[in-house]
Length: 101
Image 1 (cartoon, rainbow, N blue to C red):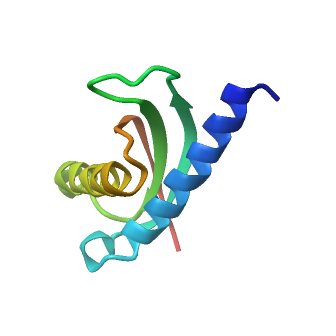
Image 2 (image 1 turned 30 degrees about the vertical axis):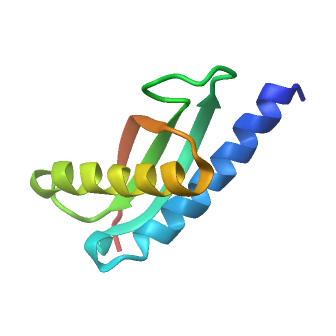
C-alpha cells in the first residue's frame, strides 16, 4: 500500500469515528447508521477541502426532511475535524439507504 493509500484509509477511519459520535446526538435520531465509504486526502493543503469523503446514510426519514439534516450533519463533522485534526473536509457524495424493519 502506498503512503497516500495509508493516509486515505486512516482518514476514512477517523471520519467514521467522528460520524459515529455525531450520529449519537438527538438531532440526528432519524439516522440509523452512517458509513463513510471513501476519503481522499490531498498532499497539498488547500483553502477549500484537504479531504473529500462520501457517506451512506441509513434512515427511515422521509425525503422532505433530509436536506437540512444532512447539511447540519456535515457541518458537525467539519467543525470537529477543523478543531481536532486541523484539517478541512468536504462531503462530496451522499447516498441514502431506506431502512425497513
